[in-house]
Image 1 (tube, rainbow, N blue to C red):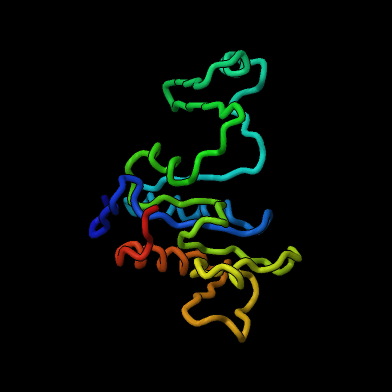
Image 2: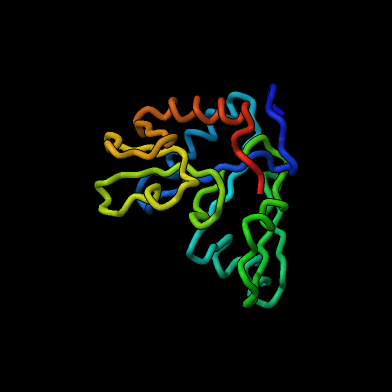
Length: 185
């Protein structure tokens, strides 16, 4: 683990969610954060939630054919990576807490999505999308990164950062990690 940063109770480290509407720039921001944090020596995991079906391989490939034939788990391995596709087959989607137990040890697990979870969140907010802000109704949002200035009635303790200066968010995250501000589920 990185100097002065301990994983919490579980191996996946501290957890922080990045939320926002589609097209707001969540993935680009996460890509920057992962690149910079890993370059600084931190071990980072990502959990990405999707409302859509996830396709690992095209339907005509062997692993997809075997999954469609009825296999519960298909582990596809190569010299470069492995992927486990687990079919839910009408079972409920696993909770975030359940999924986190499947991850490798890390200093920080960044989550894209899971707006409904009671975890520390950063909101990527772009008023030009015409969608409402999430932070106004979610006290777990502690930072908003935006391309607009902070409103005058910003609640106490909520940070407002310029999305075009991602280094400020990176610095905020590193300090918060060192002070163990992000909890585990």
